[in-house]
Length: 417
Ligand code: HAM
Image 1 (cartoon, rainbow, N blue to C red):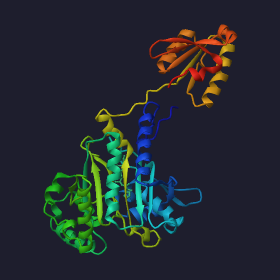
Image 2: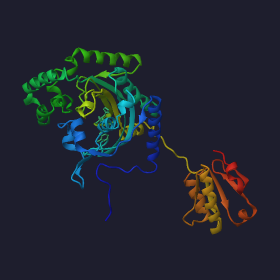
Image 3: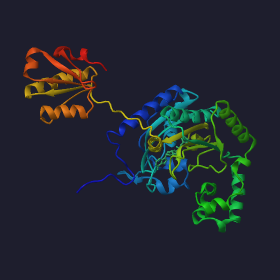
């Protein structure tokens, strides 16, 4: 029986992983420049953490979570997103007591049992950041600047930033009533899915992809036009700050996001280089969430970005970084005792930080040379009985074919990087 990876999951193979490592390096660097520190939370958590934060009536909680009873009959869930876990860790470890503003970032796998398609996986990877402890709109904007700086350093130019305000506990309930009344009036024109959403999660009718829904809801009231004074002020300030740092954006009054914890600012970065799953990143403010999860009332804001989708955009634009560097040195051994010597020498050189490879398959000299070439080795040293006796060997520079005689005792001194 041959095993296959589970539908919607992917192996990241040598040759592909270099692009991932490049993205990871850029993320670590930019996060540090913005003074965010890494946090690593477990891959699974108590199920209630997610249903309580993301929202019982969201698609994620309703249809997509990998939830199971463990052997002690506790319901656990593979994390579908990072924010809930970060806030749980923030509360549990009293991070707020150590510092009034906690700026953290994370990177890793998330799990959602969605229908797999291009750009939509069941195990996918995100990097994200959360700033916990301040209501300042500076941080809403810092999040977008952070994401865009990472994209810029990776060479991604094709994207659009959409922003909206989804209001707060003061203005949203009234708006919701207004929206439900209007949607109920036009209910018969809505798709069956939107009719169901009208009952469960009416705001999500606004971001239906169905053309009929779009036409029918063209003139329904939008949250951004029904904000309370505090939310208007916050939203205005966010826009002023985006202008001040030269970030282009579009206001999208229909942007509602698929997670229920947002208050005030919500944003999404989309790319036309992606298909129907065009969201590269998304996020927003969640001023009530820490309290909802049992902590002291503490505002927060964050974003998360899909790494697979980012790599798709890089690939489309021909910008996928390739790491073609092979070993610095490849030992070609002519017999068994030379191979043992090469093995010992390789171990010493590796300990000095030099990447060394040799032949483990008992290949002919010609085949070993071919392998050194295939692996893109920078130098080759051929060792046999004569070389070991004289302590001297030829160092071949594979870039230009040049050869020089070197002492086997001081190989490292002869290598240029
Ligand atoms: P989200 O919009 O659910 O937000 O996910 C963020 C990003 O993760 C998406 O824009 C997309 O690039 C990627 N993504 C989501 N689902 C999949 C999937 N099935 N396959 C591939 N990529 C996917 C959140 O997760 C929030 N926690 C963001 C946040 C952080 N809000 C505040 N802080």
